[in-house]
Image (cartoon, rainbow, N blue to C red; front, side, top):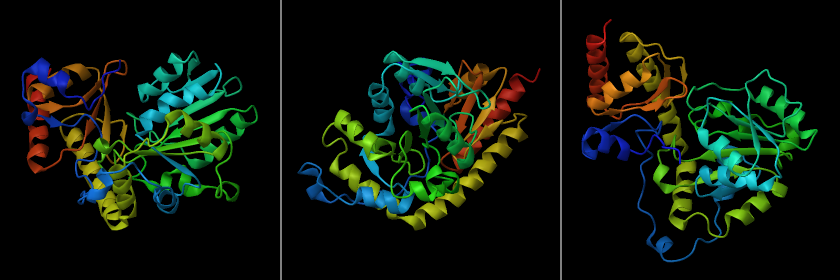
Length: 334
């Protein structure tokens, strides 16, 4: 089992610091979540009923067809069941669950980077923006890759978990005319409400694909996959465009602030998004451990020798991070 950044249990046990004394910068989740209103009481008393969430996703996100799912992780686990064993191309530095789930179902996972040929590839998985590096791919290049794959019945899977802070870069924002009424075969787009909206605990995501792929996917996930309250919250959040506009501006400023703070202390981020910075560093674990001793939990990627550092939630936390970086430099100045 992969240990994920949002699990502070490991940190609490290792460093003996109680939960309340941690500042969690590991997840890349918006530290300023959408303000959750009171959920109508009747939604807790019956099974989820048909609602307007798919239509809301179409209007607000651009999905021609959308399937609400219990977090996009559920789709990542199910998609490998919908193809016979094949060759799947995935970046060596990205969200690890993609490769893990395809391997578990007997598929051959190929370490792939842009520029390599797709001639012998059946499925290409792209996380856009990439997690943890923040690398982005233009809709034009994604459509080129899809065209290459679809000739052989292949798939392009685009995971947009961190895209909502920059919706203008989403593949859904630049659909060609032929894809506006239904996505073409072989294209799967994943979006969640956990990162930008800060609703990770609601466990709700959306997947877009052609009906020929969405229908078997829905069958495998099963009936009532998303609770009624979670569906209602998602619909309200997606319709709150005023909050979204304001939050995007705020996150962009705070992302620049985090980048600047790291540089001021002698660290050079090599990528990131509105929600985190990516810091390759030769002593990444040493920095991770030092910050943890100060109650600052970052996401350490041992295989990639780097840290993903999310946005502090308030001014006290910003100062605490600055102090932690300063004390590291003082201790390891050599």
